[in-house]
Image (cartoon, rainbow, N blue to C red; front, side):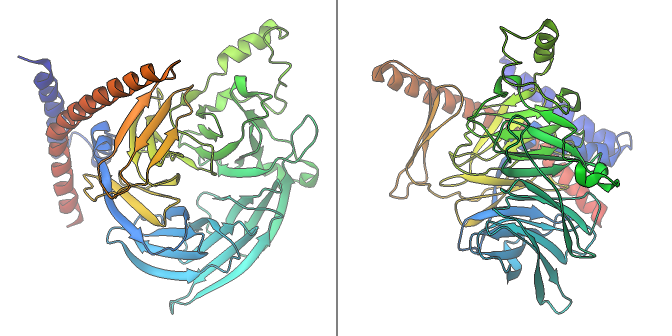
Length: 484
């Protein structure tokens, strides 16, 4: 008797036991829901649920409201759209007032989903208020001297949020006064040069800590509480720096995306490099070492030990070269890391060990934005295409036929080659190829990889369907009963 049926049976029995424990009250509903939503079997069943089609330009931002029933999006067409994502229908669409591409749009908390803040390539930060009549009032709150890719809302505040721009300035906004305050200008320490900023994030467990990053190797953390003292205007130094040791002093990397986990871990997506996860204890403090100080030939024994301890978790195989991509977490307790890629895929890794679990085709060109649902195991994605895609377990919609493309991975000299039929064939073949000295060896590797990949996919499909169906059917039925 083969081992695979035995393994499948044990996994299925384990799932049934959890359901039985929940029915008897031995497993709290929330614990069951968290385990269910974090299941890798469920992750492996993610598929396309809906396409949201209304924008006429690239969709650069998607964000759920707190309840998770409405999605807000912004695009190169300068329109802001509120969606009922489950039915793929538009609830409201309005002109943002921006003069250039919208890069970020978010609901303000506890505003009954009527307050929306946006940032754009025109440098403006704008506020949109949805009135009872359905009309929308928009106004400009402030402006940066450069593009504004990201904004960060203070957790739990309906009034307070922060922005960063390519001018290196970090601003604070208060909707009660509609006043923009320049907090500081981010500068690198060696030459006191301004750092063009791409990303900003607030620690959800400690809202006094604000992380920013841009066109150099460091993610810098500032203590916002310092700016509320009488001498705040003289204070512009970060309290902590985060960077992989081997990238210190590099002139060829930058950071396009930041995200905090619910455990204050900081996730940073580097250009032409990988994604790194830093725990709070991995910070280098307010005065990080220079590249010369990290040279293994000249550093002291103590510095060598420090280098050995600074080893953030790394996530590989995607490509981040062409656009400003975000990065984020997925799962009720941030069990997974998610990112878009230049190859048009969504990449999903297990957070704790960096293992790549999924690489889903999601755009004909580039995936820039992935937003996880606040309560359910589903996500939204967008990129160069003009639509938004909703991904749910068991999604069955057809993705369509991407253009012919040859995409490169950033993992060493390896390559991902994707070939699509421009005539409209929905079937695409993918090959993972190691760097070889001659073309013949390269072709052999492609064929071998393709065969192995097909076998692995079939095996994973067979293993996933039998035991996951039990969980999904039971969980949906139970949710219906709870709602009733």
